[in-house]
Image 1 (cartoon, rainbow, N blue to C red):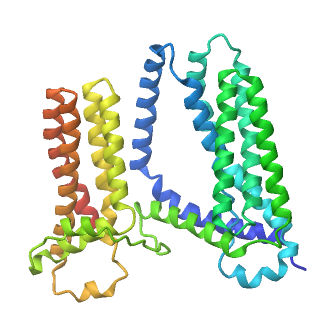
Image 2 (cartoon, rainbow, N blue to C red; image 1 turned 30 degrees about the vertical axis):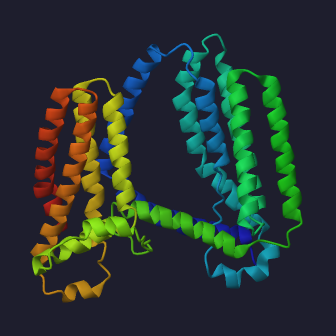
Image 3 (cartoon, rainbow, N blue to C red; image 1 turned 135 degrees about the vertical axis):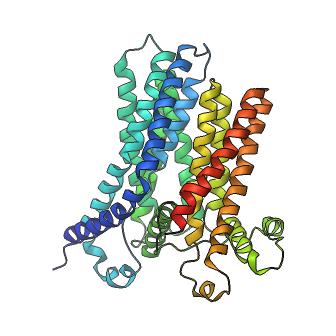
Length: 404
């Protein structure tokens, strides 16, 4: 007799083994040091900022929106795979324990977001509302857990509907109601918080009623959702190590390609062209590069100390270089590259040149932030220090790693 609970435990054990295989590469020494630095510096400046918190700071709006989005984002990890479309559909009436375990697993792995947000916004809440007892905020965090569970169950029910427009409308309505509930809770408007909670309960019951009218589980949708989440994880892991399961997403971006593909027709420039096109079109390299520039610029702008600004600039330059090293292995499964009559040294020099050019652009943009703030010494320091750091890091660490 088929035991879906035992089957989930097997599937869950294989899933954990797959995750741990790549997590040990993601959270290596480099990332651990960077995260420790970010947390320590962020906590220090956060405490200083709270000491000078403006009187009319929109605490309720910021916390309400953040908590509302966190409880609304409640994906269900079913761990189903494509072969299940053939082998498990016949046993769908026995899959109740499996999906119950999947809901419990999905709830548990998303708890860290709730607890992290609760810890981060706790000092802001206390500084904004010093006259309120501490257990009032703890009660709000407890309500978050309840709403998280409710949204997770509602998401599971709504996954039985095939039409994406219906699912999007339901998600939008719940995001609005979740945000309103926590805004009114933080603001102290308990009457309005109760009214919006009642409206959420009505939407919750509506989702239950709609799901009961559906003939069964939409298996292909569950497979698609779970595959997309694993591919997102693989794309992140691919920034740190080779991931053979990754299906590269190719985007056209014609106007960018026309800008970066102007390379002379010479044998020595073969990989210059390939790496430029790969950076623009393959995976998440371009998006990651832009995000690191934006985040680095924000840190430089808001951190008060000029030496800390410089340190953050160098840290983001290091992160960009470290993440984009995987471009070297982007086409490792394409055998045609081995047929190119191009020396391996040319390939390595092409990557080093591209990485240096990208980090040099990043350095100039960080210097422009200093220029905008009229901090001339900081601009000179980041231009000089960033350029020297980029060159030494490329010729030292990166060159050694890609030579392996």
